[in-house]
Image (tube, rainbow, N blue to C red; front, side, top):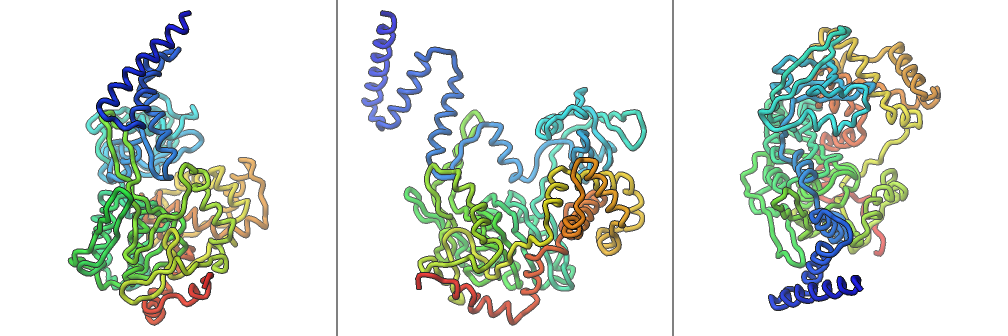
Length: 545
């Protein structure tokens, strides 16, 4: 009898709620959603968190949409935005975990840790009386303890060298910069190189500083490396494009069912409109990277080198809520100046297959052979200055295709990297030789020219793998030896000279994409022919003629 009474009350309550909503001319779908939430809150059998239910409902709605619409709670929103803001609050160290101990690779120049005297090579054992060494604590949990609001204090205890006693430091947290220009240096007497890892709030300023410094070193042409750059802020890409394009040249436009066409055009006040340029991209270059490379390609402003980009061309508008959570809702699509839609095809609500697209490309051979790539005439577009053909269909297809080189990679390499043996060996090596290396090689350039691991070093490396149950395979080691040596040399340089760009500079010696980019930018006739006529090989790959 009580059951029927509850059901009657529920029916009356929902009917009353529905009636009031209808009188207010509320849309039927919203009415239904609100009635459901009200019924659960008022009559569900167990106690529950109303906010959690609402969050779950929002996530459920968003998951039925495109792959890039998303809802994040307050913590997730902060983690998402922090890298793009260009700074966060913390103690200012870059670290690795060595045998479950936090090992300081470098301190941020001028940062809180450097100011109190923490050194590269120090091991942080405790944070605010909590032991973090030897307890299998996750990196994310460690970072939560080290980061905090600007002006707050954290006490750490550090083990230095072979001394048994711990040194105590009291550090005042401060803003720590996050740089998006990972490296910038001269490749030869006239070619500058700038690697950009993300499009953040300060990326444009960082790029301009890099170009200015390289110009003073004699740069007359530049390679902009957007490989692995997953994008970021649209405004950063627009500001960067403006430096290379003429007045009123279209950079990008957006358009959606409920969003009118909106254009971004160059102002014509760019300082590098005549600088010869190559843009490097790969399958992980997405969003803002595709806007930049697409604009340069469509205006015949630069040769694009690498592999087809990711194909992320959906525009998200953020809707922030009072509790710090955020809905990032797709409201439009990005189009390049020639009219190409950057977004690759997708099925609404099917994130699984969308996320497996890069794996599918690998299976189909797209990364390894130009023969596996075909174009339909419906995907053919014409550039706006020289009227050469380019192709759409999702992502930016480069003017010069560079296959992934797998000849030097082996399962032995995979296991040594996956088990962290490469990083651990470098940490130990730098720990023993830091002072000697800095004394012998004053600069990164000196180190690059003069340093090489000895055969004894490599035997010790192999032994470290065997100690961690990675069985030595002579043939597979020889296949990957040069890759091991280059990668570890770059990691040593980064740690010794506290410079992320040092790693890039050294590993770039073996980068086939960069080699292709440098070859084309230094071959004036071939460079000009590509910008005038396009790549004739791509025309041969068309289907559906």
